[in-house]
Each structure stands twice: as structure tokens, then as C-alpha cells.
Image (cartoon, rainbow, N blue to C red; front, side, top):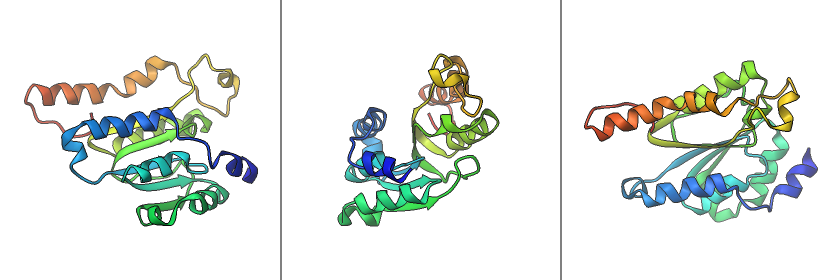
Length: 181
């Protein structure tokens, strides 16, 4: 696994996290205050470092100590004060309140009985106006035949996100709403 992290350390961040950063930057209210992201399954830190370069505070979490070591070594000294790392299993990790949960290619590697509680904890951690950036495998992915992986149909993911839409609509109508959008 150590070789994988060394090989991926210099790869560019995923477009999903770049889009999330851009959406926050375009939101005048969101751009006016410091932001905090949790990078679940951070690997060598390609997304964590992108967030750090954009001025975010980041908690990078991975179950492999080797991943955290590569991330810390690859992070420029001037960005390290905004980086916190944790070795933890995503299946049981309690995600702290944050503005962005990033999960690039990590959550599908949890078995279904572990995936859904982890997904719900991630969504519940988002502050009002928060976002999730994730790369999930659908039910037509080659990995869907592997019982150790979770590849839900897109409709199931959309349903799990329906509360975001409902809260955003309530806010647009002037109603009060708690939670992320």
C-alpha cells in the first residue's frame, strides 16, 4: 500500500473537490469566513492539499498510517498549520461538524452494512450551507459484484440527499431550516 501512496502523492486533486472549492468561492457569504473540510480516506492527500492551498482548514482521515505519513511529508510547511490528520476506520469515524465532507474513492470500499451508517454520519456532520464531494460507484460499476464493496443505485443516493433539497427550498421560501443544503 505504501507504494500506492507514493505514486499518487503528486497526482492532481479530483474535479469533485475542485468544483466544491469553486462553489464555495462563488458564494459571497461562504467566501467571507474560514472553512473547514474533512477528507475521508485522504490517501496521499491530493484533495487535502488542494483544499489547504485554497485556504481551508482540513482534517485528513485515513485508516492507513502510511497514507497519513505521505500526506504530511508532501504538505508544504506553510500549509501544515491548517492540516490535522487522523488514523481512523471510516466505518466508525465520527465526522466532526464541517463545511465540506470530501470522500474521493473511499466510501465504496466499505461493506453495505458499514457504508450507509458512515454515509449518514458524513451527511449529518455538514453545517448549514455545507456540501459533500464524493466519488461513489454505481450499481453498474464492475466493482458491484464484489460483496465487500458498496455500489448503490444512483436513485438510492439521490434519496439520501433529498433532505438537502427540502431544506434549501424551505430557506428559499423564507422558512427556517436546520442542516446542510
